Image (spheres, rainbow, N blue to C red):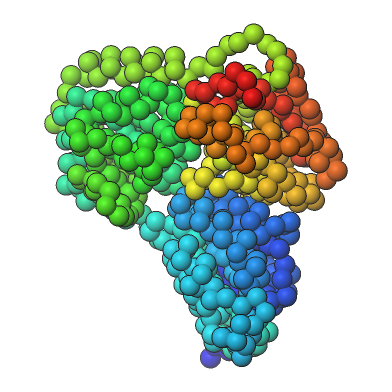
Length: 562
């Protein structure tokens, strides 16, 4: 006869987290979920105290994006959950598995406008893939497990569980835990694609005159980057990566033609417009990736392979949709090509090779940073050129939103051993917390955070978190003392009419030193490479404060006078 055990609601939640594969949690602690915090004390989950709930959510999102396994972020009631919500929105946009645990007022107080009371499910749960509030302690563990399965199944995404404060201290009888081996996360198997559908995709690509693959995070998530390289070579189809997903394909491969989106090389959009068949593989090709939905044009046939193909709203739908994991599709496609190369292989292969070589030449020319005379303040092109030369082969790069990012969209080359984590939500403040999350997930691996002065300042208090947690992070702060992206739009649409985009001077190096980090100040081009080499090689936390040339607002806009 199996004996039941007695657990508190908080212990039941944490046991379900462990069973679901959660190994990292990030939080600003609150009294409304002390029962969960107490249970975490003895659990095999590393719990990191952060300086802001937004930082906690970004750290958890980065862990999920980096590892494919969900992390937890915890916050209190309305105020904490509101701060957490930016990360929930980012996780949904990035299709990242994440579980948010938010405290709730005691059950007897619900509906009275109690202290910090809000309907968490209706208010913040709408940002998530699923959300629930536990009302019975017996459901604390099962609901946690159910939401974790939703977070990792199909198209991954964030989930939210609201936990009344009193319920977490209440006890409940539960069955014994499963064997330790059964506690490891068991992700659902990839959906097997239909063989006829795979043949249909290959037939479309073979018959096309200018086919193109646009790939996204689904390729990396399914462990299929090598399979995609093999497939592209066998089918003779070049590859473009979706916005902020450059690590889906080796950027030095002769078939790579760039990354779409803001700041992309002009050759990328030109090639997209010229494509007659596009395979969107493991990507939802969002607004930025499609240049405000201008792509695909009416002359382009769109084929999509994704766990959840198709698009919401009134967008043009795929001409052919395959509901499948990218890796599973590529395996079947490679098998089919090997068995029937004459029937399913490319027509006129030599013409294809010449066309790909010409497209690659055009991309390399458009994505080589300009070499200007060295001077001061710092030219952004000099920074990205040094990053390309010095970035460790196994580095993880995290990026913030901001004007500086366009230089990296156009010029950064991501190698096969490197990772790139960027929020397709466009959220500011992401880079530093994401870098901390990635470093906590894989200690010792070099992590480089790219940020502007506006975005970095939003969550720079997390520098103390980074130092306390002994992570290895080099943060590059690109400082032009303005909200540069919006300033660039102002200059285009309303020249000379600057409103609310100017920022004051801030000594980011001094802030870093005050938090216990190393700091380097760079004010001229000649000092960029030595500073970056120092920062990339160092253990611990290093902030490189780059004083940028304010005239160079973006890769394609220079202001002669401020």
